[in-house]
Image 1 (cartoon, rainbow, N blue to C red):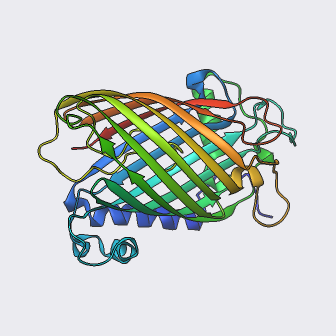
Image 2: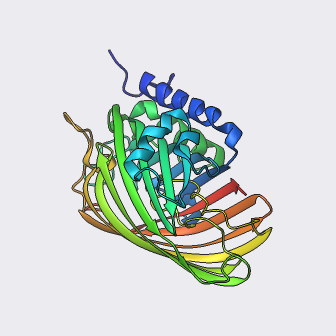
Length: 342
């Protein structure tokens, strides 16, 4: 009989996407780029439940102006983003490996809690195709991975809680079952900035819209971020809402040598209409833990970032409105991102 709580090797589907991610990054390594490690956890705000932990590793290529210079696996997707021969276009590809942990607020009981967030683990690879022109970024992203015991979420949370001296989670026997996930996301973002944003004190404004379709999440959203500071990052934003989207934004089209030092504050607001969210709706087929989700939800972020040479650090606090009917309170967590980028 198959053991739903098995802690052995991950499922073949996850092995496959992880292999593809590593091979993709290796194939374009000569093009340079940036690497970012992002970590989100509600321990930063002294809670433990809902979206309780997220860990991601992202690689983004440096710019290439011709579709022919993209890795072979990425070329067909750029033909979906723009017509041939469009002038002034910069392109990047990215690969992200991400794992997320979700639990109810009460993790000290082994009994199922029908009206609280289901136990769920997500692990997937994201392949992103980014195209920018005249302050507009278009991104097509494909996510592939797994939800369920073979995501490794139970093991991660159990060992992390043991390490930091927190209570052991007792209810993982009630988690959402294994299911392969596949999502296709499209995002469009606009970047408006003051003249001195790169060389002195300045500000920028970054509105965006996002569409997602798949068994992990189907939704439509829109948001806006604003940044103010000394020598703003020459990229498309510091906010990582939702945290699993990316660990580092693509750079803007090169405009000379990047600044050595910079520091800034940022704030972001976002709203979404959600048709499906697998960590709340449960497995696509068959019996599964689930709650009645709220179709409309909003998120907000306050944060700060700094850059010294090639090193970037970003820290933020994130606020989420209630995501399901019986959720006791809105949810908050903290995020930290370390990146090595030009």
